Image: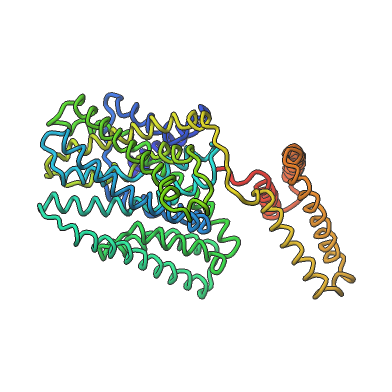
Length: 530
């Protein structure tokens, strides 16, 4: 029996990866392509019915996804845009839930206001993975990306808290607003404190106890689960616990992780989260038979009509809220108007259009007790809204961005120049260290003298790079040609390395180490390819 499960798991994993590769070939973002593929596969006669268990999403999938997103989030950018992010992640979630509650209870027969709040809590959070995966290769300002990613880190927490309170109100028939607000802040604050506390304890453990890159990597995989389970055990926000702990540990990672541990853990996390995300999106498509077969009280046409109306209301609320957030503070307060640059109408539109729903919404709907009235219509509407936003907005987003032709008007030093400036400072410090403390070694040791010559040459190269960067058009052509030449040089070195390997003169361990160095050199040139 276990062999059958292993074979099925291998077949599913291989099929998913082949679908991802096909999506890349067709230049369709893999979340969209996998959902479409799952829908098509679910319609094949004789296919077994797949049902997402909510605990798989909330307990197994969600902690690593959130932790990885928090780890690679820029704390500087997050804090700089904290007001907009928190307003979108909390204020917009509550307003969306409120609007959905009134719209859904007025158009769906038999659906109460409390059930409408439940539906709003389920559908209010945009999906982080869908947005970042689709936006990754598109031209979009850095600030917009930061806001979308920052919002997605927090809105799962706020929407799940709304969901819990609404579910309690539906099941018990009682809801006291004042108590709910107080409980919300307690759940949020205590969740953050638990995450920070656990993050600090594990950081201290890794700093004090002797370890290696393998154990460090495994511990980083364990940490998000400890944060999430600990917070949820005490009925606080596990999502905010993981996000807060992930941000804190990432910011201080240089204190407790070695360079090899950071490289290894980064590679492991990229692969793990990619596999989870790919599995999640194909599972959304495979849920079609489960969702449709539960539609007993309403026709499919009625369910689709309700979903279109509610989805349209959600999109409209987000659009109005985004523009109000961009323009109202400047209109109402002269100090803000003078201090901040004039708002660009394109940015709120992109932020609104990039809000796609995903697996957290579906898992929340699936976790509604089976005996709760109107569960079937809530589940169906949620499923259709996910399809509308993920497939509709996701497929149109590249064309919308092309039409808007949005420019990054963020003030600051270009990334290429920032990188060159940092490298210049580091090499300058290294050269000063050699001259001040190792002067005799420089004179008597040819290898150290060569290191000094290399640093001086690299400083001269960076100085030339500064002058090229200041002439942006010239820099682009020079930099492109430089990358082409260096890439060809690396290819010739790799070919020679393979020749040496076939000659069987040198040990494989030494050859692998040299190949890894070439890999690092090429990574500097191309960046990590995900």
